[in-house]
Image (cartoon, rainbow, N blue to C red; front, top):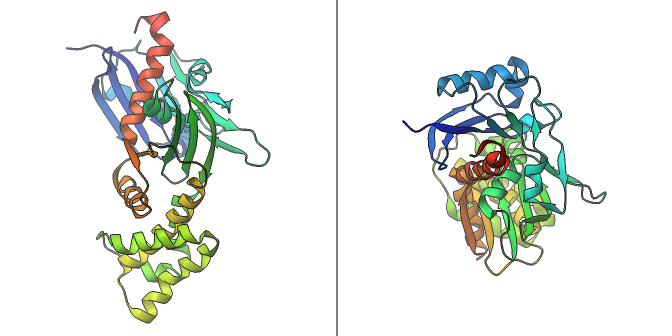
Length: 308
């Protein structure tokens, strides 16, 4: 049986993912749960990690590399930030070792943009960037990373030059559940209404200043002209994503287009959005990107000392 070389962990705010990886980078076992930072802060980070390592029968000496919110100020051990312009290789050099643990556990830092006019932070996405772009990607890359808090990143030659966070996913959740628009989307099924979504993206992209007005049309159009709850939901989603794209695409777009790091429904939605605007996309699976990034980081951190 192939022996594991390390365990890689993506520890988010609400989710936990662990991969047991061998020297060739192949995944031997994996675990997923909802024991993210918020849950682990209550039950204990060491206990959560030990339970998952035991479930995959990880050896006691096996090193562990962690990215994500476990390194936040309210996480397990604060891992700090690398400031922009941030070489992705510098992220590895500032990995923090968790004290008081018998095994070697390292937590990767995030990236901070210490600009008084546009302060921003990311934690976990830097590892996806590493997996998607590598240490020294040639030329300029414009990266879109959808999520609860979407990130748009400009990188050049393996260096994160700047980035912006958009609360698109969180706003959609609040608007669709906590405002009058919740009546418009009540009972929406899983059926996609791509036409409504693309129309909303185009409208918001063309006139982002009218975002609050465009959102209300999900209800007014339904009251006056009919329409399904699914169409209303896609209007809300398309409007918020269209506003995000209006900002994200406001600068120069590289000839290769936008690198889209996403998985599942978000990947499909953003593909539809970029297609509506005739923008070229280079898709990268988000799960694969973070796993590849952790593997690259683990190899770089432990190669010299552990001959990984």
